[in-house]
Length: 483
Image 1: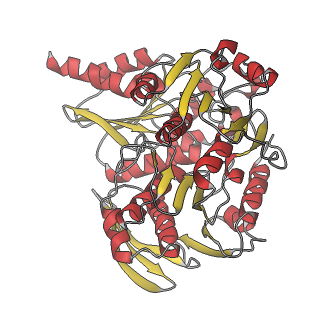
Image 2: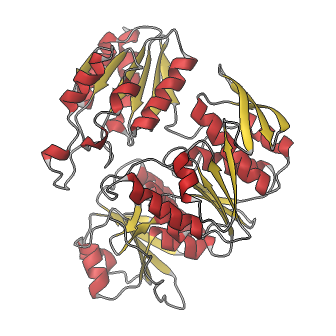
């Protein structure tokens, strides 16, 4: 459960040269390490998961990686320690940090202190679409020569990285409601001091922290209250929960979406190799927009990005051209490869709403192809039973479904709270598609390599690397058809 308020910002040394990062191999933490290194700090880090590709990437950045959590990791006497939310209070690094009195910050505290404090912050939030929308905003503003800084939760297609340090006065960040650190148990986005705020949607998620969707709404209400009268808030006007959390906003609230009540609206949506739609603002046409990404959810993401661009004064023509050249972030319907007409796609979807949206988009884009949906329940929410009855609808849009075993974590999750994978398989199959339980990734690869046929589309749905599934399938198919 989240705390009611952030802790007081700690006193830091007047001079900081050496910074140690606990949990440095996380995507965000590794990027923060590189950003600090680029600013001239001596940065080192520790992590239990020190393996390629992140270990290789850190080495390329000149950041020393200490493998494992050990008291000796802090023997180099850093001036500051930054602690990721993977770190628990009992980890040896953390114990040593406290006993020796090293000043320490959480990830969002450090991001704000070193990079956002002097900027105008654009915060993109919501259960779904944060990464894509943040990437869109960053790309539009860069194309408009604003030279923004940004951090996003995925590798952007246009920049090939998940962060950038620009010279402009804007910082664009993906705002997450997940908690921050064992000593800073509040949502990350409470630390970001938004000048402008976007809320894409609000649903129940992070079941390991929040008991219900009302608890999530309450932390969004607090986020909304952080935007002052001179700022602005854009919400998905088709989402009642978004409407609920802005009831007491002191900033101007505007709406984007598909229905008539929205200030910024998309109509005449046409899906194909590219998505096109008509966009209007306050009833005035902004013309036809083209997006190289499928699905209604990407149209909504684009509207959110346009909304922030409008408030920032970006030229409509520049935004339109940027959207036409937008490239999706990694793991967002990312095509990994194709062998003999069999296409392998990697997608980050692991919440049932995201799974359904992805499957609808693929079914719309490829109506004649046989689609295999391969699902891994690994996130703290997806492996819990809370969405047991919500997954079948989206997964049943596939022609064939394979479920791997739910990921096991050392959190003592009771069996009666864990997703019942056998029941899920029966529920999906009752809706139509043949569904298999294949626990291990390598066995899934073997099955796909033997059964996939030219014209098939294989999509791996997971909030992680899925044990390398996608590239293993690609390699196995290459070997099969090379014979």
